[in-house]
Each structure stands twice: as structure tokens, then as C-alpha cells.
Image (cartoon, rainbow, N blue to C red; front, side, top):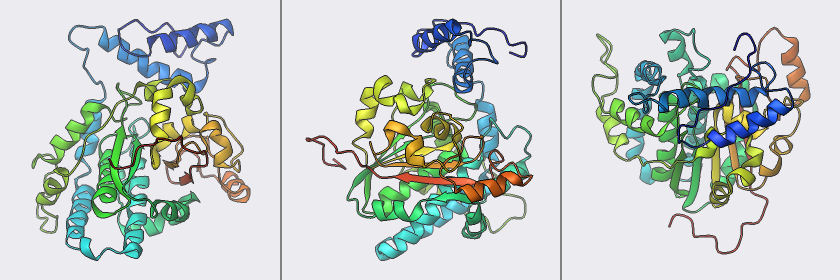
Length: 385
């Protein structure tokens, strides 16, 4: 890699994606863009993780091995303080369920949304040098922390999103997941809130990656790892002398409500999401039936906007191309790559002139929402059935 060697074909391991990657690699070779330094950055990144998967899957004893699992579990085990606090809040919410009118639900929704947003700050492909204390600081999701972080949300469509969501009846929400561990926990809590405490959502689908992906991305087995860890009293030990930590029963009560997930190979392809209708038409048609598709994290954001370094003031709607209006779409992303859209020109230029690496340091965030504008075909099934 460091010597800019040509990318080798993905070995045929009998799993999805081999032909997709190798056909694109042949095309790039014809353009003399098939080396580590000349290939498109998004393709090369995705290719790397598919190559790692192939070298594991062709073996006899390592074909189910996740080389990043120990890192995911180790980081998750450092999240006990925030997880207990969130579980306690959800437990207290149970007694208030009957008194939750639309105004109170709106307040809770905004808190849940920001919890889900800032949970994305824990990304193991980027946090290689962070200590346990650093990670715990990133995972502070309480009300005070959210107020303090409000100034760092550079694009904020929360109000537009709430106006849309609060008029649904027993709708469907899809989560295109990002990181496992703490972020997956916050995604599950947000989904639990939507289904259990509001009349607006009745069904939630989770879309994980089918292979180990970008170190910390959610795979199907990660659901079971997270559930097992949450139900293990020894996984989040109570600090010595701490009498204020909420009991584990709150976590157990919450986990027993949680649903399962669905699978789709398109999420581990090298394609930007512009091409979803062409490369994954069944998935595209399924998402068109959703009342809200939530794309979590940095890589999903980059794929939404084609990994193009647009001018930062480019409207989000323009940057996501043919996806715009196909289904109600929400992107929750903390900035960890140069690609940013939907930010006022003056704000972006002021940040660019500072010494802060605001595009990549994970301190700033974007909440980008677009409603449906294209008509849904006749015969659409009734949501929640």
C-alpha cells in the first residue's frame, strides 16, 4: 500500500460483492487508476475491508472471524456510566407514559435525537489514540451536554423533522447503522422511544453491514454481542464506592423490549448511494415504503453525497442527487471527513480561517432532513401492518 502497488483482485470466496469489486477494478485498470494512490478514495477504502474479509472467509477456521470484535467490545465496556444513566432515564419514562402529550413528546424527541447524533462520536476507525477518559467524555449525552453542544450543530433540521414525524400514524422508520457498541445502543434506545412512547412509529428496521466493515460498523452478530453484554452484570462493573449508579435492572428491562434487524449487501459495496436504484432496486423499493430512513455516521454521509468535496454551502438536497425526495431521509453525522454540505458560506469560511480542523475532528455535527417529494406508487401497504 505504501509503495502504491496495484490493487489485487478480490479472491472468489463465494460471498457477495466479488464480481462488483473486480469489475470496477478492471475498469479502473483501463484508466490507469488501479493503485492505492490513484484509485478513487471511497472505492479504495471499501475495497480494503472487502479484501480483509476475503482473506478470512477463504480459510477453514477463520471464516467467521471478525478481526475488530475485541476492539468493539473493549470500547463498549468503557461506556457503562452513560449507558446506566440512559437506561435509568428510560425506566423513569415508563411511569410518565400516560402523561406524554405532543409538547412533551417533542421535547423528549429532541433529546433522543441529539443522544443518537452525538453517540456517533465513538468511531474506532478514527479514535485510535483516545484514552478511556476521552471516549467517556465523547459519550456524555445528558441534557446539559446537549445544550453545550448546540453551537456545534452546523446544519440543524430538528424542527422540520419533528413537524414531519409528529403527523405520522403507526409509521415505519429505517436505521442505516454506523458504529457498534455505544452508538448502536443509542440507536436502539431512540428506536425504543419512537415505538414504545409515541403513536407516530410502529415498526423499525435496522440495516447493518454483512461483513466486518470500517473497524467498528455494526454487523449482524454485533446485535447479539451488545445484547449479551448489556445483560451481563460483570460487563459494566460499578465503580468502587459508587452508590449513585442506577441499577442494572433498568438495562435488563429495556433490552427485553428490543427488536431484531434486517440484512442487505448493498451497504458494503463501493457505490455511492446515488446509484441505489440501479445497483439495489429491491432495497430502493423497500425504502420508498418507509416513513423515515435514518442514515447514521460519517461513511453513510459520504456515500449519500457521493464523497464529492462540494462547496460547503451546496444544498443537501442537491448533493444527494436522485435520492432527494425518493423517501423521507435523515442524516445524523458528526464531522470526521472533509466532505460537508448544507452549511452557510459565512459560517464555513469563518471556520476554515480558524486553526480548528472542524471538518474532521468530530466536534461539529450535521442534522440533515429531507421529506418525500416523489409520489409513492399505488398499492402501498398500510404502515405498521
